[in-house]
Image 1 (cartoon, rainbow, N blue to C red):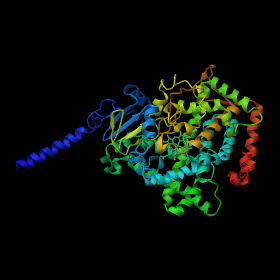
Image 2: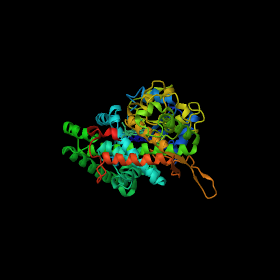
Image 3: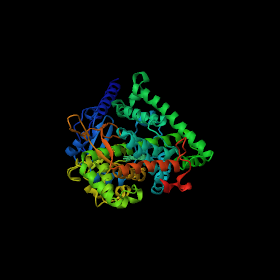
Image 4: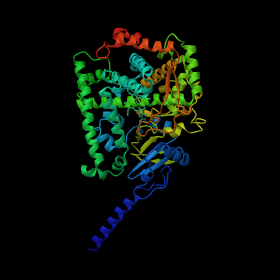
Length: 539
Ligand code: HEM
């Protein structure tokens, strides 16, 4: 009897010890803020502007620190060297994702590439996505980018107050054309609205403390839906999203079978489906979530660029001077001008540094085996955060980091992808596209969309602050950002004015010509593939 009691007591003590160890930071882990039993640092996790707190901890605890979040560990990398040493150089073990029950399992049926674990399914889909987005594929989309950009300029001329909508339509139309072969001709397009609403719901849901709590304490998943509204909402979102993505995919597949589809990702996907036999649900999610990865990121960066031009007018003048010298009045810049517009390129790099839309690296990586770095132990399964904001705002890396200063990059001729691959971490321009094997596969496309968007905007327009009734300039606060995986400046007003009537006429003529040459007048869709028809030269 006594033996049983002693055994039961020992069991109880072991359980208690185990419980009390939850939330504690083992001694050999990277340092971090003090923890509380069971919850660790959960109570200190900021609900808004998390990047500022993560930056503050970086200044306090150094380039590698740890947060204990219930049963999970998050290792935060806050120097270029730490990101290079771990996420890049040891990418064989640092490319996994932690389980995200709400975001990946409930909302996405485990099919969102961005959140997928580092396994055979991720490899198959990543390979396909790479086929769509590699550097030579990216070149083939330039006609799409040129055309959509011309519509963006035309809209900015005619409805300048809606410049955010025009920027969003530009990046969304590009992505839908690359992925599905159809464009979104207006901002009011229902398909586009549904997409953006879906992205917003997804971001909201994943930012709730509940989503995080369910990951930190997995037993909470057993709660019935009526006690866990976040889980209920996630299931509803998945149902809705799946139906939307499936309808896009099935339409693309049908057009592929009839030989009517434009060159796009779904062509490769339909061919691969025949060979590999994956399901329509899988194909729908892979293609659908590409839209999410490509749309918001590009438009948020362009929006930040407009804000930088408002706040740093001397930079705007300098970039326009370069455009006037290299391009002149008779034509607009094209992608081929990129090597000769080094100051505009530097503006693009500086925008990605100054306002990194994926401010905390989008989604943390995870490590698949125990490791050590700088004498610290990094446990298998820990999340690994690329603390982009802290790296970009480190005054030792970038002097006066809140000043928008393209001169930082004036001698940097690397493409964004080459800079990311540079073995010397001090030569990397910025960390906004992530790192290692999970680095953004859209980087080549994004570079072209951003360069074209920025160079043509400044070729055509002056970007100036609004003036209030008292004659004061209305200037936005660059530190007020929206919240989410992908963030951008909070909405701000700006006056977008053509630089001259000649330039305004050119904007109108270019768009009218491009429409006539390339688009079906009724559907506003491409009449023919640009490469097949030689239309590439017309846009
Ligand atoms: C300014 C534009 C963009 C930025 C800043 C950006 C940033 C990022 C970041 C930070 C990641 C996560 C990287 C990591 O885990 O280390 C990512 C992943 C991804 N991006 Fe982008 N992105 C941009 C544009 C695009 C475009 C245009 C596309 C495609 C059309 C795209 C497709 C993807 C995909 C599919 C992933 C998931 C990759 C994976 O998990 O393996 N992105 N992006």
